[in-house]
Length: 476
Image (tube, rainbow, N blue to C red; front, side, top):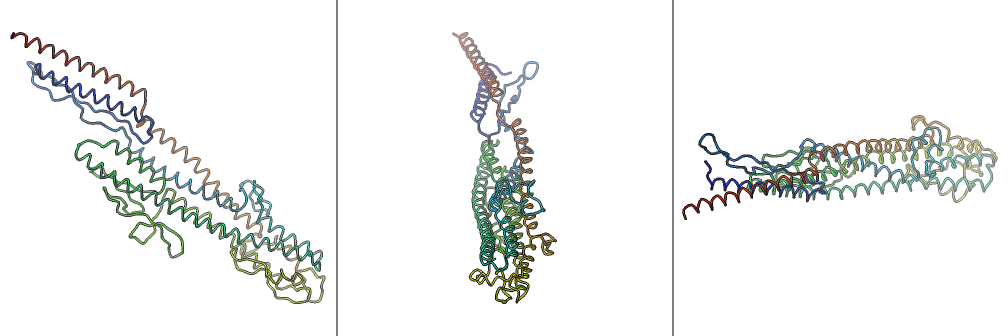
């Protein structure tokens, strides 16, 4: 039997429970615009009953925990999808930049294999494609006037202009590759800071929960936000320990355990001369699965590398094919054997300076004695339409279109994947908000409910106080 004093204690416990309910509802309302916050609920249960005259008598209520309303499965899926989004966004940015380096806007509908005009692009930037067309057209004009000095000079100037475009483009691609490598360092600096934050929060969560016996809800919110930010930079696996801490593992290497950041992420140059990512005190590159770092590496070693290799192959075949014809021809003075292009790739292709200095030495005649012969000039003008085995049977113009077309397909694919990914990510976050997000209407209803409960508990205490005064007055 509780008696007056027991009932007073019951009212006091009820008052404390309702007050804590008001505090939690207020805390939820204060964080209504905090995207990293998961709403909380007081968990209330009856206290132990005592023996009554007939049946056990309840002794009131107490708060046993403040629970965080989270769905760990949804949280894990959000982290995973943030990593995929980060990778695709990095790929998209890189491929769009590569597209701009080509000096043209790529439209898949306008990029084909039928001729150089297919690579003109939406923005009208023809550049290399137009240069190839002009190069062969100028030899056609020269074939009509093989001894004309002005025609020879025009042909050589246009050829020098075309040749200059290859190293200029190659230099831009190399420079952009360097920029991507530098962006890796920036992303890894951000990732290392987040790893340190997660380790620090692990320590705080473990110590807080060990002392209080409850859940460090606000600290867990902060850690979840840090993990979501980290997944946007680099993909990882997480394992929660019994003490509430979370281990972070990247590519099979543990980076964070409990409150300790065991390793940092760093870049290094592998045997192929490429910048890769590894964990400190290790030698092998980490296997990336998602995040901006993965997207940057994928774009650099995929679209950018493929484009540069394709441009180099195109330049090499242009050099080889033109030189094979030109060295067989004869200049106006009957000499022969000069190469038209020097160099071996897009990085160093250039017109032979001897020809630029003396256009009469241009070897477009098929005869050492016939000055007006134009057989080599005609062969060079037709080279643009000749299938080349080293280019998989494509002409030089079609090979360039195919190079550009592949980049356009890669960019289009990434754009579509990213559009789909955004739908998935928004759907998941919407589902999580429906579980963990703060509803103002719901919190206001709880606030009113706990307020009324507090008022009722206070009324109970007032009633007991009056009863005690009445009881004490009986002895006066």
